[in-house]
Length: 391
Image (tube, rainbow, N blue to C red; front, side, top):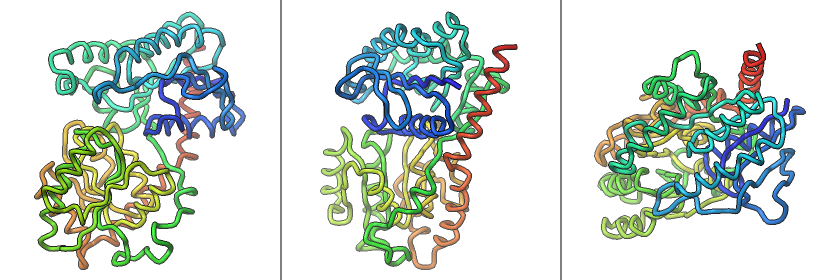
């Protein structure tokens, strides 16, 4: 099978959930003998077309900033969608899989799909709908219209979570046109990574951090609420330790807030971490807190589960991560409010807590998200799309 993945950002030059998903699925499909191609921005030096981990990467345009003032660049999305057309049209593929966001490339893929008589699959990492107005104000109307238009031009939709599937149905996509293929993890790799501090730091009391957060430091992640929760927790846990992993436009303000609250000694801003280091830090933590008001999936939740670390997340309309956590079993889902988060964390880290039971439940849940199993399910979806297209 000759497969084309389309997404402007390519791993490892850009690191994120969508990029990691394509990379992991692509290299596994390639190892099974499939001819896998990735079409994105040219983030590398040298030739436009290169081989990388068994896949063929096509750089369709020069590297450009993905974000402007903290928001996805419209001009970048437009340039990429236009430059994509001649590259994608040159070859004949059995199937094209395009990641929907940032939308404009979907119209290019649809055009090539029609011209080349090739089935196309649209992979949805999240559905914004009315969130467009929060993101762009009145101009969000145009984003909502484009998102709706994209939902109408695909007969084959993959949602990365049941949460995203439900939101697709809300904007009018029929249930029979959606298949859920979740994001995954490499369980074998994660199991081979030692906790930060060495193998001794596996018991609850020996762990280096009480709390860990991992993600881009942007407003939607609500790390400020977490810092306020840490301030409240100091009343019961004077030496509470919180590790903030990640960088972003909010970092400076968050460091200042930590100073203002008097928790600078309790909070470590670790910055961006390579994957093994990140997993080591998660394994050395008692609980992961993800207070995001918007998550398309929440990859770090599954990574925490694979480390046997329960998760506290929040009950927010656009937070798909809450769909991964079974409240009271492998973590807790609470309101986005510092007192509620502090109360949930306290339940997880105090000596008489059910952390061990939650940890075991989290680890068991992680097993169904292994990439090897997911790629087999994806392969079946691809075959079915091709058969239906040919019939």
